[in-house]
Length: 310
Image 1 (cartoon, one colour):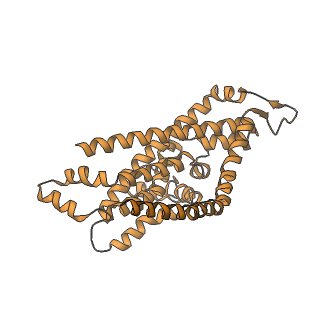
Image 2 (cartoon, one colour):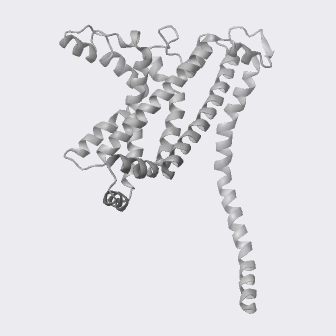
Image 3 (cartoon, one colour):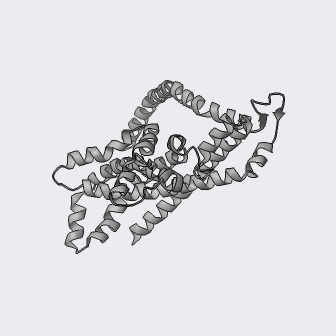
């Protein structure tokens, strides 16, 4: 035994330099990609942080210099900023609830076998491949338009007065457009997770007398835990940065009814030409995104753990 242990130790010592060399080579090969990613991410962020502490307005170049926390103080005292923050949270939360619930329902439907399932899947996924600008133009001119839109035509056929959706229900209209575009993403990811669910678990639950709700709550939802993480996190990031749908339809209005943080930053840069204020608002959006992500992760993890324990 002693001889065997000595031989194993000697072999390990002989292999260690090679392993260290392989690890060193791997790190050297990965270094350019890692450095590029760090530069790609850190340089814009550091420049945004720098300008957020500067008094920098393109229309008043004579007034420049270090502003300390002046931009943040002006930002926090701006009622439009707080309204944009509230609109952003409404868009994100409402769109998340609708896309996840509707995507899960469609995933459960398309996980079953029925005639024409392939065509139905293709049609359900198609909106995800439409560009956001095109999505806004389609809904604005072909569906929501109070004269030429499809909804107006249906209302007239039913003897009702057509509704100007973008004027009377602007926030609802924006949420409808975003959820129409992003529900297919939730459908695709959740359907992939459902197809990896072992059939023997479902059959065992049915043999034990579980009904459809118990099967869904105690087997399907816990199995989709990691998939739900992915859907919620990615959709939250994209919903926080929603811009094209608002830009092409409501332009943040009427008034500031649909102005979210990205559109507020856009207006600050391209209408007020205030780079310092826009940079401070951008840092606020980054902080909001991180806070929102942490809260969502804890909320979903707590619910999934509670459901698994039950």
